[in-house]
Length: 405
Image 1 (cartoon, rainbow, N blue to C red):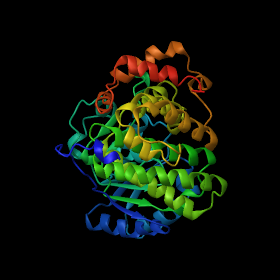
Image 2: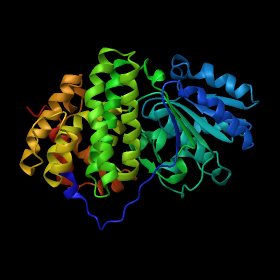
Image 3: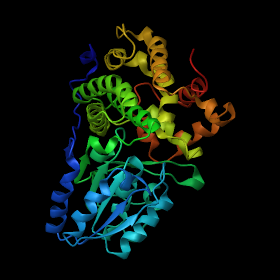
Image 4: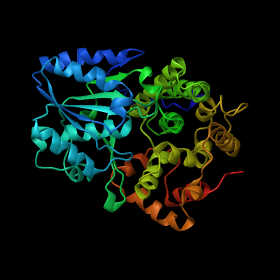
């Protein structure tokens, strides 16, 4: 049983600070949120999104009249791209400053919400002298932000309920992560009806992101029973409802439970943190900015499992029970579990490995260097249940070049 892996003498933190409106119809709660903004004396907001998502999801046709009926001005930044950059954040901040935005609303998945979170810091009066590069190179203490509202449109990121944000610094190939309390959204909206228009690839990749969140959080050195409980349930829901959402994109029940799994995943890694898979994916998409985050994680996951399984077999056997039947939680099952998870990934449609996406063995030195040099990733690596040595990182990248079998 995984309980044997818990250190009852270790004092841990259990976090949950965002008020999340969850369920079909939750989008209508933007009216309550706008009432809150008005009562706080906020008369202008910055909205961060991309050119498509805020319209096709139906969010804007509800949010726009809610803002206008209360006399709240808004500035739209629609330049968000996958794997957002510090340049995009600075563009958003400049737009927000023109109307003296006192809050930020992010509409989208992790890219849009993280852009909004980052902009919310730089819109705070105490940080007007800084830009996004300063922020992601950790040149100042990020202790404040204007209020953040997250309207989530994917079921994978978890950023709508956590204190994390990620952005790339293109010229350095860095993709650092921030983890500070000021990045918690005040409000989040998780409405499964918004998710029915997700493209098939994003349906898969975002669910895989949620799965990776909990695998890492539950096996980190900072884990606790709450995290493991969330991880086991999140993994069960992804295994059950991802195939159903793929087959029937309009199935609200499938979307509901994938979204619930994603939200739990966000809370899970907010408490247990992350390690190998995310720390090593950031260099992958740092080099190739068009790489979907979830695909990068999927390509690495089997090799990461093979590395860490002997250190926490009971926990991983509990998490992957729906994926690899018959696991007993014994250290010698590492290869069995890793191969079984890889087979599951192939079956849901992620058959790519690093070599398929243009990475070669010659890139491994660069990727390994970026893993250890990118600001903030050292914290993630320090959470790994097996020491994150250069040798282990190199081996995971090498083992992820081609299928294990």
